[in-house]
Image (tube, rainbow, N blue to C red; front, side):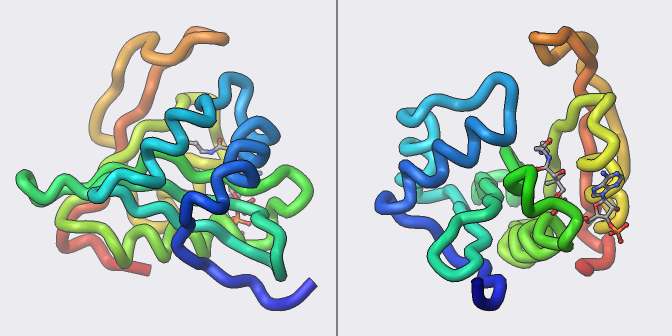
Length: 150
Ligand SMILES: CC(C)(COP(=O)(O)OP(=O)(O)OC[C@H]1O[C@@H](n2cnc3c(N)ncnc32)[C@H](O)[C@@H]1OP(=O)(O)O)[C@@H](O)C(=O)NCCC(=O)NCCS
């Protein structure tokens, strides 16, 4: 299948991205929302490819004005998990982040929380009942400016 490559996505990847989003989330984003992210000039849209196959992706917004970035989505196809692809995607996003980087994660999402903690993100806040289906708190995590980039 070839080496894992982390590459920027283009509009041509939108259908593969949407298929992966559906495979990874209960309430997937629509194709038009994902298309908007790909076209956003402040967006960082990376995918993990094994050969031609998109096996994971990471989306981030760089908010230049405030000098902060927000990771808005990261996912790996179920059958490709636990092969350090999430690690590679998160590392690539962090390298492209501006200043402090934040993200939100479901309280029960232990795999994602462990991934973020491994990369030095720290839980700093809570949004009560932020997620629906099922209703659940969001944990807000930050990577401090002087936090080590892994
Ligand atoms: C979270 C997710 C992206 C991890 O991707 P992955 O490629 O399987 O993760 P990796 O193999 O790179 O693992 C990296 C680290 O994440 C953590 N981790 C990954 N899977 C884990 C699990 N099932 N349980 C606990 N920790 C886990 C570990 O710290 C791991 O490091 P280690 O291997 O040194 O222990 C993947 O589980 C996923 O796509 N989940 C569904 C989508 C999602 O919830 N995204 C997050 C939205 S906020």
